[in-house]
Image (cartoon, rainbow, N blue to C red; front, side, top):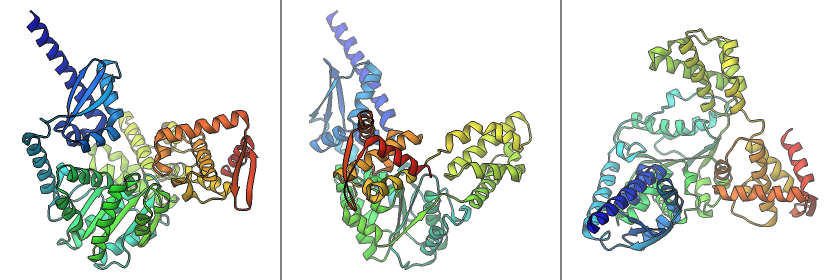
Length: 486
């Protein structure tokens, strides 16, 4: 009888651990789960503790620093409780069987990345297949003309005069489109070119996997023996000093070989924050070009092109061909921030028209898109806030993004975060990411601090260009809000 109870308890414990692993895979994503947990951990749950067995201290440290919150959330979803987490070195996990599995995984990654003509961002789909976007479908206007010309120069010239090409801009303005377009154009024009396209997150994951599996030299060969290295979201390297050091050596090797690097970021190199000065200097040594939000004419052309694309790809949406010009104009005039908003509005309007079997007209567009326009078009943009705050406190916007913590910079950063949270629909995480890759807790604390200062109308001191300054918190807020509303 006792044996039966023990078996049932064991099965119950195993079921709970399986459920925890399933929830954890959903929380961290399948790729990270496969790399860090599937073959590298062994969990047991008992007595209010979750014991995580790992093969070595390196993996224990990495999981504890990067995935503790996700592990706690997974256990809470399964058990309803939040147990304490402890890490132990499990000899079975460091044995030959586990090492063989990890080596096989590393070989799979290496094989996927050694394709002659580059690969897709996701390792599991690595092939010579072309990327999604091309330069032919990139709508050129005043807001992106310089970036487009620079991209064309990379494609047309084997020895491009600037290296790297660093493209930056806000969300949804076409940075990834341009980066993938460069890769596709180079592949067509010079098929022998060995190019590599990936995100900075992929670079980090592959670097860590190479360290973990002792395949660092293979990783370096893959990254450095390329004619063109194209990396998206390079700001992801913020707060990762060891990966920054590795990337700097990668860039130096490619640059000295006369090859080319193209990088894309949400912010100017000097405004990313928590990036080493040496790496920032490498970034600005080439050509740094910004893609602005598209102007009216560009937005209209984007709408026409996207409607044509929908009509071509989906026979049921042939109605997209007959969108009146005044509707195109209405959407372009009212959505001014980025391309994704334009495409979302068009898709919603076309879908509504198809479902209701009605022709699209201006009155329909106004009715259907009223809520969409209200949600997508904030009165104030974060760049306006940063500019106003930086001017008021006598610093540059780059310092708000930096890791500096002196009184003036900290005060300006906190007011920027508070005002952004108050006047836009950005989440704490989005604000933190934009302002130098700070975490959401930093933004939350900054907002609470400003709220406390406003509640007591505290007297605040800081160093301005003309010397020491002092003002009441509410006066500062009033002056800043007047400035950003102009």
